[in-house]
Length: 335
Image (cartoon, rainbow, N blue to C red):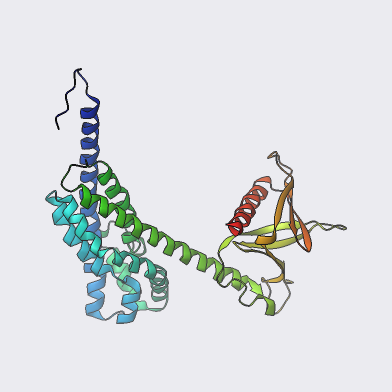
């Protein structure tokens, strides 16, 4: 349908012009960054993966643990780039979505990949020498292998931003509008799953670290299946006597209070003994003082069915962080 505008400026035409400018800018960025991405994928595939495979410096299980689905991701980019260079954005990205599961697999393997790289650099002299030699090539521009390994996950985030922008700035009457809209949705869903995988891996690292800090029979399995929020020292204020410093570990469902083991303890020096576990679902939180943000710290009151805790900090900012984290945990148990 033809749009008639009586004045010098037409809002509809101006909107279309803005869409076209943004679309042109997005397509240019998508194409240029895809070329660079494919080049870096190819460098790792050529100078690391294939040579390692030919030389046998790493056994196949170790090589697979280190690089995961790298070669298949490289192949997916090689398939996509010609479509982008010819301006077939919808067709190319729709076909690319068939390979998105590779990014889920790559994310699931990322922690194992980092661990394998550290282990092999530490104990495998031939591999360490090989990596140093390859990283010194001018093609890598000073980048190390550890810098390049997260590349596919970083690129997935770029895909999400660029393809969403491309879909939003493509008119509904454009022949590739539906393809781009579908591709944007599928890439966004994959990026969310990859983000969730990364969050779980970080949480598992926190849980292993906290579990290693806890000692004694009562500490076994305390962190299993939980989500870590924060930890730190707070002063427990008793009804009588002086405040006692205790280490607190906050998870989404419980608050764990621990006491440091004596420094001269032969087996467990530097660890903590679990003294109490407080369920967040039964907690009532109140800030007694420390609302003003002054330099004097503050006091939090945590009430449970059979006990009340008064927790103090001389650091106002630290206390505020604890208050917000505790509030988040309590509200999470109500939902």
